[in-house]
Image (cartoon, rainbow, N blue to C red; front, top):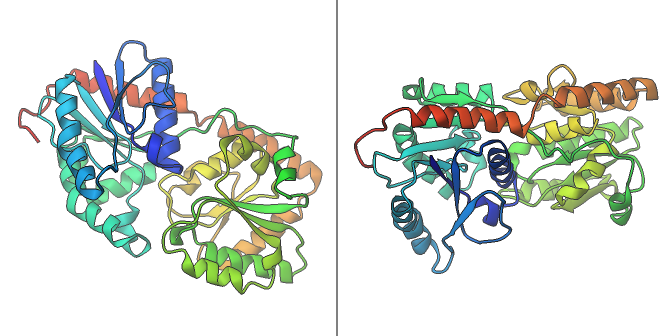
Length: 376
């Protein structure tokens, strides 16, 4: 079977979909030697061993060319290369394929539909215009949690027999570390709380700033590290940060390279992740793999990932967040050591190999089915 993966996120993103695309492909080619993998992407490098790359450059002539590339150039090349399955990791396609090609779409979350106010206008509109049609034509939909699967079925019940849930994994390089050279280079030398992710409204960082003020007002001393790039609709956060009485102890690192993440998680007091909604919540899993305590919201998929070890909060209530910060602050070394060990053990059940195997098994089932005969 020849499987094409629309792998543009490898070349045009740094966030969660980039990580997902990279790790899924790497895990698939490691465990699956029976099928052939063709990557459609914007750049030839860095190459992923075990795959072939079909390079289709983008952004030459703006949005018009990008649309022409997506709806015409890529479908033409996929037909010419006689692929059997096309997998889209960014849940926006694939488009314009004949009926004999199976179409697989990955849904990470439904936030553009559930929280349109937190997204840019064009993102909302593209999802509303295209998503239902994409899913109607899909042979298979892969979600990253049971909660996301539930959301998908509530909004698109016609997918009842076509959607599976497969938990994500975390980079196996993530593990507890004693080294702190990267932290020292960044001037991070004292205790700190950590949050990881793009700075955008759904991450609820405004309430985190309020909770941090309460924590400090009640005698807490640890700093706050915010690791992530500036995202959309983030102006209110930066306004609140500029007026924060403890601004001097709040540090923004920007994008953090993968090799630095183990240090960042390992030495934190805890990861604080008060997000309003997550399709999965990869930073929670990453933190647990490093033995880092987790304080996170009790909503959406986060309890699936944090399990019995996370300290859960009401994301709407800064006082709830501050109370859990104080709770973690008061752990003695024995309790912290025990929590660290349990966290690593719990996180060990979430692997990219198991996610890729669930995807591979679902794709093999597709191969035994005759796809729709109508072109799409």
